[in-house]
Amino acid sequence: MGKPKKRTSARKTGMRRSHLVLKLARAVNAKSPVKARTTTKQSGKALNAKRAPARTTAKKPAKKATAAA
Image (cartoon, rainbow, N blue to C red; front, side, top):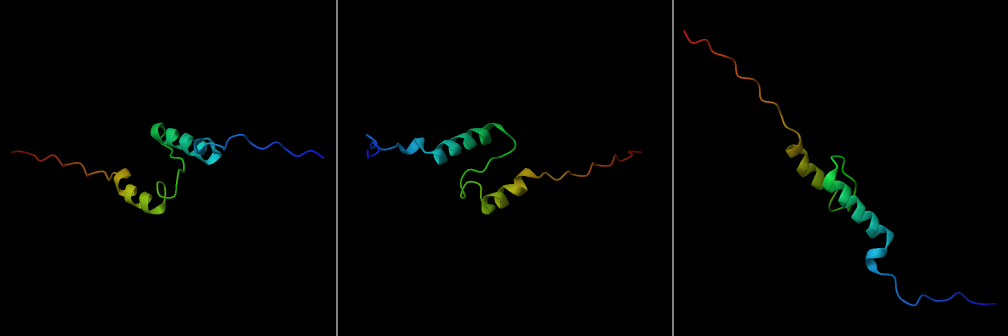
């Protein structure tokens, strides 16, 4: 019985599915307000905790008009 032919060259690092998905997620994150998960260090809990105060903006109360008499 015959045997399968071996690969003539190794698969390149950038052609792995995980790397292609990562590249696509980074492209989405650059343009979209909805962020996609990239890596643990880039989209982990610690990073989101740092970003959370920057994203939420508290409204300042409007100044009351004073009557000048």
